[in-house]
Image 1 (spheres, rainbow, N blue to C red):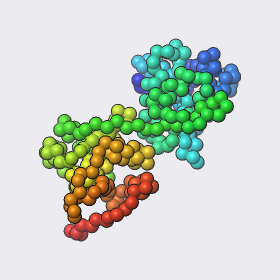
Image 2: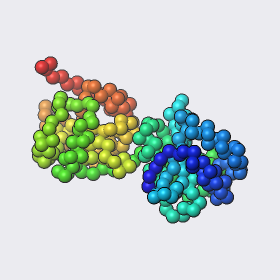
Image 3: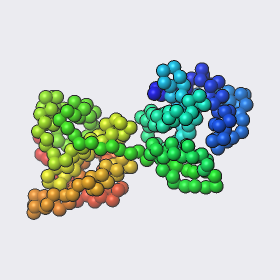
Image 4: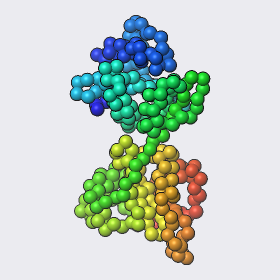
Length: 286
């Protein structure tokens, strides 16, 4: 499914979808909107930097629309979805919502929330299925919030090129000052240098890796440095792995996380999650 921003040619179709009986039944505002009201709203929406309206298309067919209303002060966007009545009950809602969120979050780093009618079971199941969870219920409305969920897979030798592309984008480094050539990198991957080495995906896209060494050190690299993502990575590590047996003066009896001195954002997140700084490392100037 292709996701794109709306243009003026979409206005009339979105107007018809909005006033569809089923759409109004599921909407928090169920009244019929006049064409005059819609045209003003649509014109304002196209110019509004805090409102993003996305259309999902398959071939030349418009499947539906997702709208994001951004509150800059709170760094929250409220998301809503409306399916073209012709394509309802065909299983397109999940793909439209998932792909629209991926498109939107690639440009804006914010919290996503949704408000759904309590009796709108279809929308409730849809939002839950892609990672939203219920944070509050009041009167006839369910308030939901999106949690980015990662998928973890072991690094394999066949991942050498993928890992090299990640390496080329890395800003903060510990182990190397200059980018190695691909052959050197491939030999490194082939050598299977870590006790555990995983890559993780967000929306089926690899966004980083982590490794665990036999000295109980952990290294984390990720494209998107957000507290909830870092927390999920660390939860996965501490749930699935145990530290190696301690060796006095060589291997501590706990995991520890290595972070580049320049990566202040990751350091702040790690400390905000309750981890304690216990060591600072230095190397010679030259």
